[in-house]
Amino acid sequence: MDKSEPRLLFVTLSNIGDLVLTTPTLEALHRAWPEHLIDIVADARSSDLLRACPYLGTLYHRDKRAGMAGTLKLIAALRARRYTAVVDLRTDFLPWLLRADARSARWRRGAHGPHAAEQHFAVAARILPSPADIPAARIWITPEDAEFATQVLISLPGPRLLAIAPGANWPGKIWPVSHFEALLERTAGLFSGVILLGSRQDRAITAALKETSPLPALDLAGSTTLRQAAALLDATSVFVGNDSGLGHLAAARGIPSITLIGPGRPERYRPWGPQARLLEAPQRQLPLLLPETVATALHEILA
Image 1 (tube, rainbow, N blue to C red):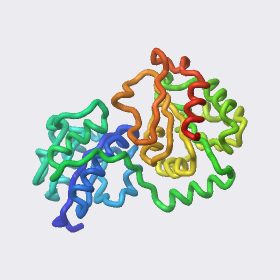
Image 2 (cartoon, rainbow, N blue to C red):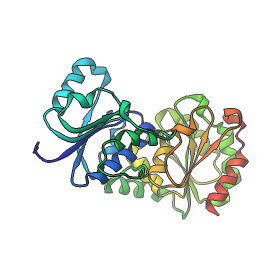
Image 3 (cartoon, rainbow, N blue to C red):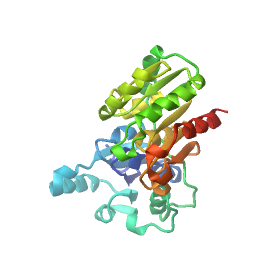
């Protein structure tokens, strides 16, 4: 490794959706210094989303379980290089322990809007060499990821596929299974098949939807990597899902999407992208968001 080559350092966040919402800032750094590779500090669980980034330098993992010893080891590794700029969206101290020409962290961000993508960008904006607009979120895939999706979808041919992610990280964020079933009944004529995505914890929900689906359905919950899921989303016409990481992946891949929001802070954490649509439940209670409301939104997107 040539430690004299110019590089930037970017410290991102851990959860899938949070990481995706930092990629507009990552992209802005690349546009400002296009000749630089960017070293990234991330968590192991979500860093799969960064490995195909074309301007990635070295990917470092920060493991909170490693405690202070792990933090000191990471700092020592990062101090082996002098960076043109360091942008830290996670801590308030790390950039000042490293060798860098310019540095910024959360406490230095300037004026910003309510959304997390705007807040993250405001950290980097202080050191960007010229003013810039906030880019869209981005997630990159490999040719192998695309080939995986092609092979998997051989069993689900059709010109128009619907992607559904019916799970979430806690029950209050999950639209009732009966509502998803009613949505499929109402919109079956719009699609040739449905892809069910999620984690292993979502398998009971996706299995129930596959069983009752009026369309040919492929249940892939817990069976893909994050990048493979992104590649599968590329083959779909629309994504519908709860407030979860997969909605952020769809937005970052430019897929028309509908995210169903009950409790939470949509003004800050909604998917960031020009084709990302949000439907908020009345009284923040997802059972009150009716299937016909979501069906109407699907018709509008496909009109």
